[in-house]
Length: 147
Length: 145
Image 1 (tube, rainbow over the protein chains, first blue to last red):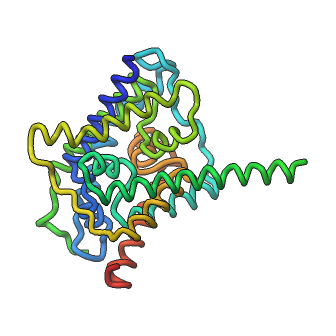
Image 2 (cartoon, rainbow over the protein chains, first blue to last red):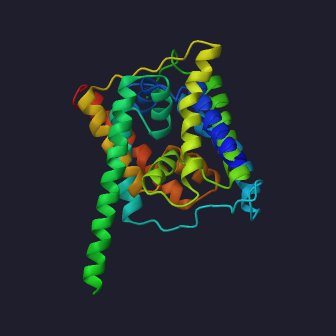
Image 3 (cartoon, each protein chain N blue to C red):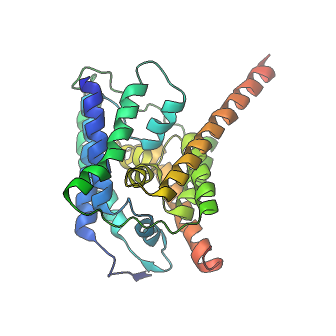
């Protein structure tokens, strides 16, 4: 129960941070991504603020085996820089630049009752489902090649 | 490069960033999980035992944030200028791309860079670069869609 409560509170604080920072506003995000136009550098400072706190918190997290509620620390252990990471990052960036939405702000805009955010979120979940299909096809192919 | 001083909001951006960082740090220190929104959402599509409820709770918290805000003050602007077809294409790309690349602005950008992960640094440089390039093409080559 406490696990769920703290997950909810963390999501709530995350969402409030997105609202305060301006990241929940796609028009502002696009103003940041438009280097050649009238450039709004604000979002660089969002990253600076988040990483300042994160550097401290993740240094503490790395030294612990379990979380404060006794859960195993699930820190990512992958270090590979492969084709999936590169192509995935590029595709995501193109989508981000087209609408000004990345996943977190889209959830917050959805909560704010924006119909267009709902359209984006449904499409985004659709993209994730497509990825699952792609991945299972790929695994089947591997198995076939392997046998 | 021309800076848009009228829209530059350094204080709220920095404060908002600190709050976002705090949320990510709370989730890792208390629950032992990474606050990567695409991973949390995508993880719900392939449920694994014990990992679905906290993900749903986190996302509900995000959705509740503007409601809590509204109870206290007027919401800040959320302007979505993209057309419906563009939103659909963008959503598909963001959904597929973040799952293929194992992360988005929060997982790679905030948590990954905070962990000094080279993998996340590469991902962040690539999606930011692709974002810059896309807006350049849309606004300055095609002249807006």
